[in-house]
Length: 126
Image (cartoon, rainbow, N blue to C red; front, top):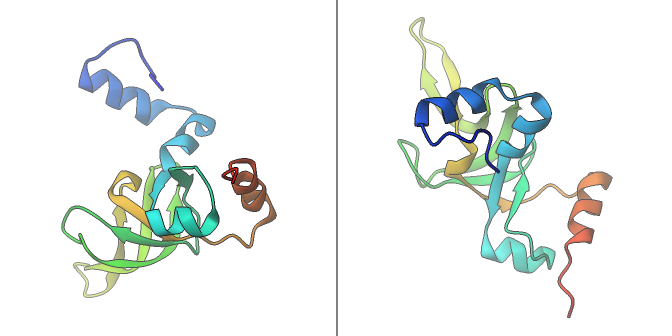
């Protein structure tokens, strides 16, 4: 999905930053693990991340760690995972914001009716 016709990285970054919320929502998709795709019997490769999903961090400082999604910040385009914390200056701890592209969904919270319908639409025909 091209936001601008320009290939310049600065214009692409600006377009992502200034995109309206209904467009930013699409940036919050996370790849599904093969085992999860087979268990859900879906042909989808990605799904919008939500609180309660179990994800694995694939790259960066916390690569290899996994945990439940504590919070999704749609405006900043970041995901916060339980247990992934950084020490603050005053001695406390804060959750580290992670880019959704660095995550792999290991277990999906399918208790929500709407999410169930989304997965039902993309069932594999056997």
